[in-house]
Amino acid sequence: MFQVNNFTVRMKKFIKVNSSVLSIIFSFFALAPLIAQTENGNIWSDKNRLAFGNHLFCEKDYLRAIDEFQCVLIKNWNDTLQFKIATSYFRMKHYDKAFNEFEKFTPNSSMYLQSENEKFRTLFLSENYSSMQNKIKNSKRYSGNNSIELLRLLNSSMLLTNAELPQKSKFISIYENEDKNILSEFYNWKENPPYKNPTIAAILSIIPGLGKIYADEIGDGITSFVLTGLFTYLAINKFQNNQQTSAWIYTGLSAFFYSGNIYGSYTATQNYNAGIKFNFENEVKIFVNDRNQFLPTPKFLCD
Image (cartoon, rainbow, N blue to C red; front, side, top):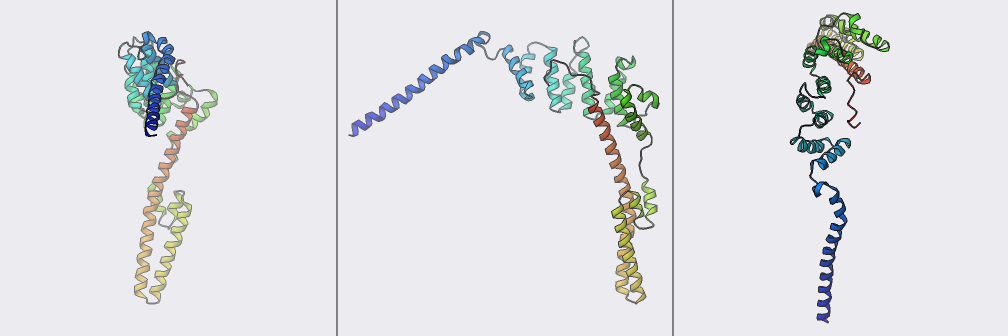
């Protein structure tokens, strides 16, 4: 009985091992046609790497696509491939790396002009406005007024920096009619921003709460007026009733809220101005994106 069982166990092991071997053999024959289709059977050929890299790029797997492209590019320079590497970094929002990759194009390259456009776009989105302005102004296309897109991008960046704006009529002349009103409002805002004066807020706070109301914090202003007035009333009442200890406590609280009201009004105005500036800059950026002021992306890139 023991020998029979031992024989059965050995037969099962034999069948299991040979099944694995047969599975490997059949898999090899199944894959053979695919291997034969590659260049000399080399799945790591430049052609196959390029095809795989393009697939990864279109699937938005940019990091792995860069690896495949660089393996091909290290052997032979290719403008399209270099542009895709730079664009991959750009789409991952690695703007510094994207800019450096776009910089590798020389004036002799067929894609030099497009790479320059993408550099300007990279600098704008990375909020490096001053550098972008300098590069655009030094561009031959700018000096010859040959690119309305660049001029519009330059105008948008000037709204976001302390750069001096040109004459209003010149500023809005390069835009479509439906956009001129919007740009006119942006221009007016930039020339005369609706800021509030912190010093005026502090002076108005002589009347508790009025400075905060001026800073558009109406609720806080009413609260400051009520609390300061309440503690002042209680202090006076306690002095009139010769309750010196309580009187001085309420006097201290009244003085605390009164001084805090003045300081709070000053800082509230600064916060108000910061919020106004933030909203303005955000509206300009939204306008730039909505109107697609960036130059067209090459057709060979996947959407």
